[in-house]
Amino acid sequence: MFVLNDTTIDPSDLAARLNRVLTEPATHRYGLHMQNAGAALSALLYLRAQGAGVFPIHAGIPPETAREMAQAAGCDVMLSDGLKQISLPQTDTAPRGGVLVQMSSGTTGAAKVITRSWAEIAAEVKSYAAFFTASAAMTPVIACPVTHSYGLIAGVFVALHRGHVPVVLDSLNPKYILRRLRETDQPLLYTSPAMLHTLARLLPDGQRLYAANTSGTVLPEAWFQTIRARTTHLFQQYGCSEGGCVAINQDLQNPYDVGQPLPHVTLTAGHNDTPDAVRITIAGQTIDTGDLGCLNDSGMLVFTARADDMINVAGLNVYPQDVEKAVMALPGVSDAVAFRLPDLHSGARAGLLYAGTASEDTIRQACRTALADYQQPALIRHLPALPRQANGKISRREIAAEFTPESADA
Image (cartoon, rainbow, N blue to C red; front, side):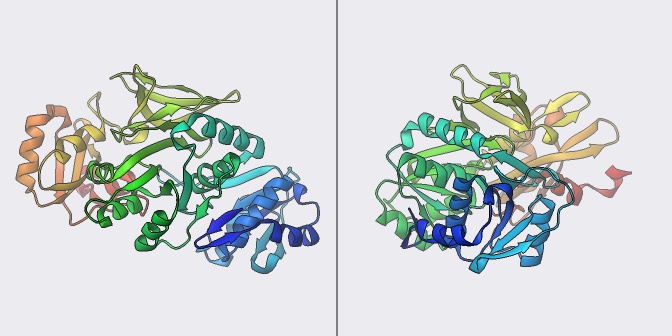
C-alpha cells in the first residue's frame, strides 16, 4: 500500500489486470511511461515482484522521446496508460528481465544507461534500513520523482521494507507539501535540495520541518544554514548511479560531511585533510565514483570535489569548495561557484561567479586575504542568480564553457 497525494492506493488492484495482459513478464524489459502516477508505481511494484526488467520514465517526457529512450535502454516493450503495450524491436538476444534500468544524471557528461539487478537493489534496501536507525519510526513523504533511485529506492522501497505506508506527492506545490507534512505522523521528507530550501524559507516563524533528507548535491552554504535552522532532524545520503546509496549522515551539521558507509559497501578515499579518489566496492565490483574526498577519524566521508572539477594551477591543486567557502563567509554573498579556466601560463586558474549585494572589489579583497596566491580567481563575475538546476546542482563544465574569455581558449 502507498498514499498518492491524499488517496490510498492498493497496488494489487492493478496487479490483477496486469496478470491478465502481460505474458511472461520476467523475460521482458518494459519501458514504463504513464501519466497516472498511481498506476505507474503500482505497475512498477508488480513488475519488480515478477522479476521483469523495468525502465521507469518520467511522465513529463514526451511519448516519442520516451519510446526512443526505452529502445536505447534495451526495452522490448513499452507500457503506457491503459496498460497499452507497444513492441520495441531489439536486434540483440541479451536477457532483458531482472533489472531496474535508470539513467545517470548527466551533470558531468552525457547521460548513460545504468542497469542494476533486483537482487542488488534488495541488498541496498536491507542495508539502508538496518543502518539508518534514526529514521526507523518515521513515515517517508516523497516529494520527488519516483522514477529516480532517490525517491524510488530510498523512499518507496525502504518504506515498504520497513512496513510503512509511504506518502508519494506528485504535486510539487510547496504549500501543499507543507500541509501534507503537518498531517503525517513523524514525516521524513525526501525532496530536492532546491525544494527543501524553498520549504524552509516558507515556514512561519517558530515552525520547523520534523525531518528531511537531502541528496544529489552538497547543499550551498547559504541554503544549508537556512534549512538546518528550520529542520529538527536533517539527514544526507551519498551515492552514485551505478551503486545506489552508499553512505548516510544521520545528523547533518556540515554539508560536506556526506555520510558514513552502509554495511554492504567498502568505501575508500583519502584520509583527514588529504583528498583522494572515492571508490566503492559492492559484491566484489569496484566503482570509481569520480569524486574526491576523505574519510575522517570517525569514518565520515567528507566530500572535496568532483575529480574533473579540480583546478590544477601549475601543479598545485585548487578545490572549488575552498574558493567558494572564502567567498560565502562574506556578508552580502548569497551564492558562489568556482570553476576551471584555461590559462596559457599555468595551465588553469580559478574563475568565480557569485550572487548577492557585495561588490566585486570586496570579493577580490576577501580572496586575497583568505586564499593563497595560486587559489586566487583570475575572473570574478557578479550575476543576479547562479544557473543552478532544479535539484540545486550546478555544472561547472557548462559555466566554464560560457564564461571562459576567448583569449584564454587561444
